[in-house]
Amino acid sequence: MHDANSRIIVSNQTGVHDRLDSLVHKHLARPFQKPFHDATLETFYRIRQWVRADGRPLIFDSCCGVGESTANLARRHPEAVVIGMDKSAHRLGKHEGYRQEADNYLLARVDLNDFWRLAVADNWRLSHHYLLYPNPWPKSAHLQRRWHGAAVFPYLLMLGGKLEMRSNWPLYLQEFAQALAIAGIDATVNSLEFDGEDLTPFERKYRLSGQPLHQLRADLKEFSLPWQQSLLLPANPAKS
Image (tube, rainbow, N blue to C red; front, side, top):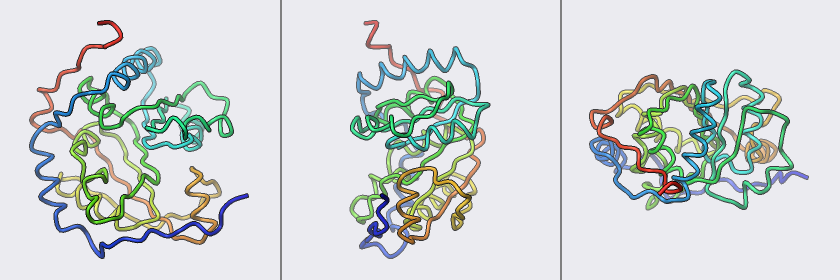
């Protein structure tokens, strides 16, 4: 049974955060130097072998939760391979109820702050990137926890491809669109019309509770930054 009374997002922000522009400019200006976690490094190298052996176009389903969206996207994109990623082992462990018979997707528990950077350092380019209902961190003090306010934001852009985001908090997408504009990328934000299939459990829950849903789309193309060429892929800890 689906919850038809999901809570709406409440925020102490009434418009785009006044620190957004300066924060995005700062993050675009220099690499993110945080050390990598060995667990995500090892997972990256394992997935790298699979990606190279397959050879099809690559799609990321970031913040995939239980992976229902990953399985649905794999069915929608039989021409590609889809990697669903989430930091929660608990959420990923619930995937069996959503699994579909397909050879073109896998799920991975990773820290996206690490995985996106590793993929960029290894010159991965995506055909599509989906960010469906990520935690919006609605408190004003949490701007830097939102993807567009985080230091890893430039790496999301450098992965390229067609970006699609969905949220039940329109301000999240409006802020993201403004961050993209600072980077010279056009985006459109529209109401999301139901096409007969909910991609994620959150989408289903929000729709059934009557919450308006919103969508951002942007083509990241071959976005690059001057310091991108200086990025180095660290050694695989499993082989050291």
